[in-house]
Image (cartoon, rainbow, N blue to C red; front, top):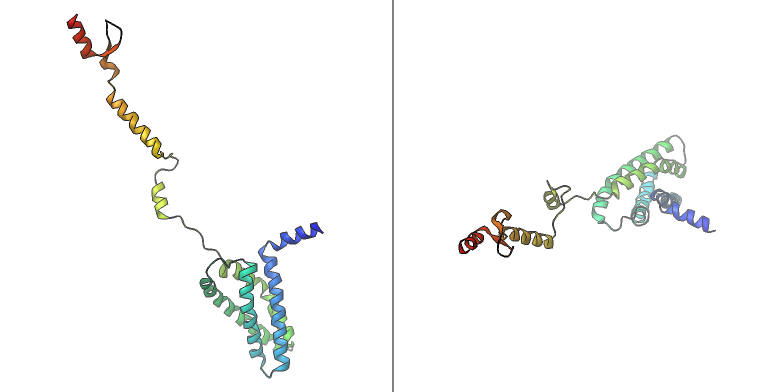
Length: 202
């Protein structure tokens, strides 16, 4: 039992199985709505197909956004703007296929099944890489300009900069070794001028 649960969890973790499951549920809803409209209303076939199609696609958009592609954390406005041309293209393909199949004698519901099956991969590709795509992140210009010409150089921290400045000040204030001499009296290092004064005094 645990093995089957783990396998189901792994399968469900991928987009396409989730999309296929929701597509099957949505297609069942579409066919049921179409069959009811065809049986209990005097609507012509194009109208019945259109009503069932758009009701199903409204449901599919909400479910796919939330569950299949998990895109509900991003703004819905741009997704709807990309979804409109997708659904219009699918609608025209579906209606054309249904009417063409009916023209050669295929019953309405059967024609809708055939047309829907041919659009499964078409819809997945558009949902995945068009409607619910993720926008690529861009590197801020400030970061790029700050790093320009400094690739691989370690940056000094503020405390390192302070120590570096203090060391430079010490080096500037300390007398040069060439300006030092040994005091003949006690052996200490003294500036050469001081040693000269000591020699004179001696």
